[in-house]
Image 1 (cartoon, rainbow, N blue to C red):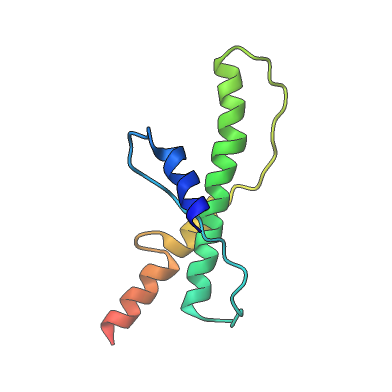
Image 2: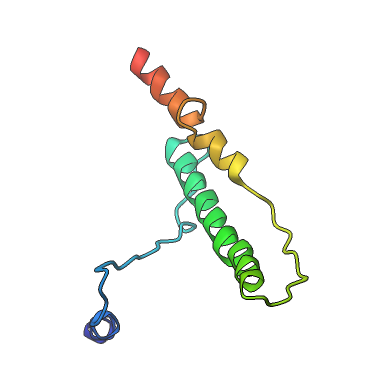
Length: 105
């Protein structure tokens, strides 16, 4: 309501970049297998997971090292770039192949 808007307005009052990002997490829709919408939802989830992994795990360790902080911790996480590439690569991804097939017919 108006309290939420007031809090948002107060929080961004001095912002200089003019950007507000809102993330709408999926998970409440009724899953129907083998649909384009589901493929796009999976791509979005994999992309968000990659962003999180990169910016939270990898960047944090690199920042510590750059600042001379001893960081013996190696965070082990699955690199999901191959999954993202499988779906969204420009020429060889599933979406590109679907686009080509739909355009030919």
